[in-house]
Image (spheres, rainbow, N blue to C red):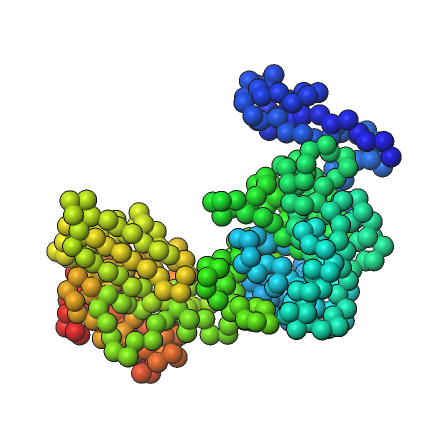
Length: 455
């Protein structure tokens, strides 16, 4: 088949050029021309065919809403993030730092699916078949029947998918795949966009569930065009320190499940194993309470988790530092200002360091109250009571605002043996929770008074 001549399309105005130019001749924007293929008028060569079959126009009430069938992967934590398992025709994009465990987890999942009767295919573009087999033996996947294809040409991969008709296929990775229709190198914006579009169309047309492995940039974002994340059904991020044995898989986008759901894994000699009680890894085991430590209950997707917030306040110089790990540094500066203005606790001449134990990242504002209590505890050198935890958002006016799903947070902490809670007044339960003493507050100064009375 003769290769089509490529053109260059401006991502700003849509103008075209027969060759690459630094500046678009139509809108004069710089570095916006992207390699593409010209639109074909022949119906059999239309690259932009619909991803779904054409249907008649109907109202929402006339359309049958059918639940999507799920195929469990055999890993409960991965199923939790996916929303229950793989969906027929669904496309999943998973990204993460090199060596964090993406290929390991997917190979384990494919082996479990194959053993349950699913037809699986692992397409590797970064390793040879012998290297994949060696990794499978290290993981204890002896005599695995997962089919492996070492190929990076898109047309050959699509032909294999059409011939073998697997139920689930993994493409590792999308940045290594290239199409003969484009002259740019694998991993370029044009190649990643075109290859992902063709694979997505193939998944929707044939019902094959496809998992795309994506590289990440130095900033931690998925490499390639942003349209790649819009194109797929689910986007998962692998998080965690490669020097630690724990890994988090977080759902950033999911058309078939909850967003921001997380799965927790531990890296072992036999691969990644799910952690059923993640609160245990985010809580330090202190024999006695220590200053600067406060436990909070955070909410990740549908799962409440207990995380220890640690703070260290030390005398600083003329320019004190504010450093946070796992928490928003700008929010830390705001909380210190609220603590000074409304509670009379000054830290303007102190270095303040805050850390969320276990490498977890907390983005919700419900951590505010625990951060302030940990800072105050470190500054005064007095530990918080044993079995104490807190959660709640703190406003600039000094008010303590409620956190969503407070009842679930309280019950999770009580289940793990915590006995004293400091929470927003709006989160106080109407019925007492057995074994849990709850102190409800409306303002920051009230919270400080309660803590002083308990210490």
